Length: 116
Image (tube, rainbow, N blue to C red; front, side):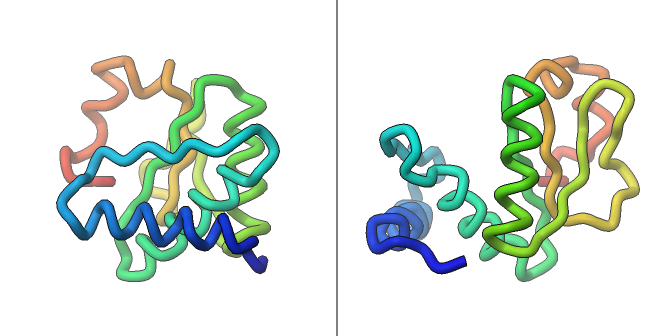
């Protein structure tokens, strides 16, 4: 998927912030301008070296949207961490999870601290 110029600028800005030592970076774009596409491209770049990535959302529809856009934008499949579904043991480098699920200490403790 080819990004729009402002989306390319957003991806570059995120990596510039990270490379400058700012790891808590917030992307703000208006509704419908492709935030999900932008973070899909960031995730695609980050997992190239075999690293794992975590995408959090607070509603089931947003989990599905993130997973679908990730596939379309980057070709990456993802595992689901929600309710009875777990990503542990999945061959996928990307996990899409609900905030409600991973906010449970017992559930989060299943993952090594440096897993993502």
